[in-house]
Length: 278
Image 1 (tube, rainbow, N blue to C red):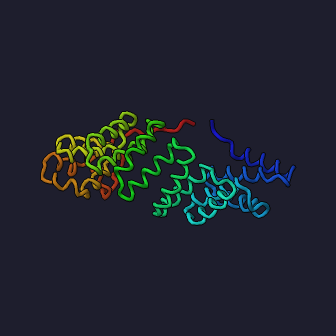
Image 2 (image 1 turned 90 degrees about the horizontal axis):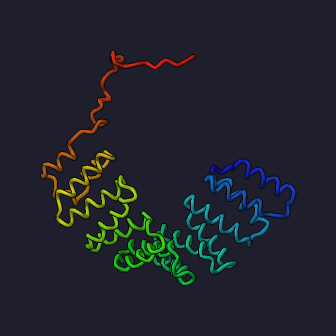
Image 3 (image 1 turned 180 degrees about the horizontal axis):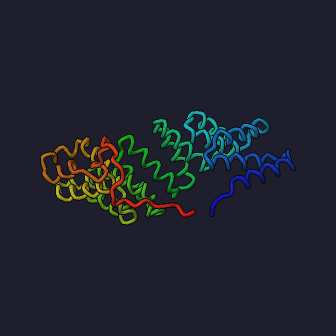
């Protein structure tokens, strides 16, 4: 069902007009602007409320989310900390605090935030997967895998978690398990080129050259731009003399064969001009 944002905004304006001491409609209006990714207007709403009620939890948290969305991570963290002074065990605030630290590359602090969530809710899938991803980023791939497994118990078809688990497994040379993760994703989204590409790399690490080339051919058929990516991938240097691999890199696609310098010589006789009906 499509959201009627203009109507919602008008209703919140009317509600605040009728009851100007009630700040909730202004917060709700800011949240609607956030959903529209109009963070400038959202922040104006949140600032209006905080000028009148500096410890409004909902406003502190939602302003933090808007700041996070526009890349002002340090300011977002400051808002999350203020919100946590009011509700120290709020899982959503702790999660987003962890995500902000991870984006800033402060992984020890991100891990601390995700652990705080897991102390409250040990089965929280988002905290499990985000903690695992932070561990992967700092090179603790083995420690990340059980966390991905636990997250997948609650969300078994989550493509992002499956892909990150596959990458972690590849990093520790558990290639068959990595391929299993990629195949689970491909059973849901068979033309996912990023996953196909990663699978091709893992299959090659197993020594299966023909299958790897076959997967790469499929990737290029779906997204020809991958020809450039494949040529720059050091792992595929070992295939540069393979004629099947050369065929993938050198073959022109339908778009490659277009000569954009060729002058226009008019329509061919076979071209039909569709007349508009008046």
